[in-house]
Image (cartoon, rainbow, N blue to C red):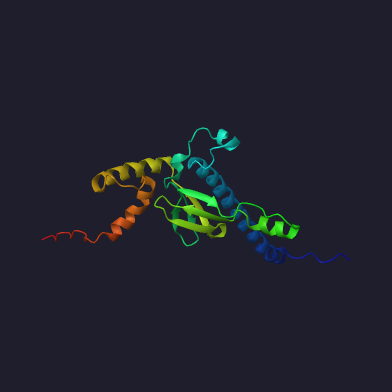
Length: 187
């Protein structure tokens, strides 16, 4: 007599946590690899990679504008953090016995320090990053035109790049103490 075949419902119940864990691991790897690529580009853009074959491979700097606030991460709490610079906090493997090496490999490049265009510094584990956000070229042109018009009205010497200014315009509007104009009642 053949052993009973388990029901598909029972199989799904046992594999659901494994599927969720695989998806979470996959997302963490996507975020980690994206931030590592951005960290390399930011290091080059900031001049930290001025020697060796990496600098030769990046002889032009097409990504410099990338770090003006147009790229960012969205945290699990829903906060968008614009990226002006990023680097991994622990990007190396510890030497020693196999257990120590495995522990360091498990955590390397899983925590990143992100500096915003305004100079704020956030240190985040990849598990707290819900999304990687960027502005499309169309939206970028619209925001740039709007920011230029707004900056010319408010402060033509504004130190903030347009990408960051675009995301602070709402905060400026909310902190404006002047009340909105009252509509005139119709008679």
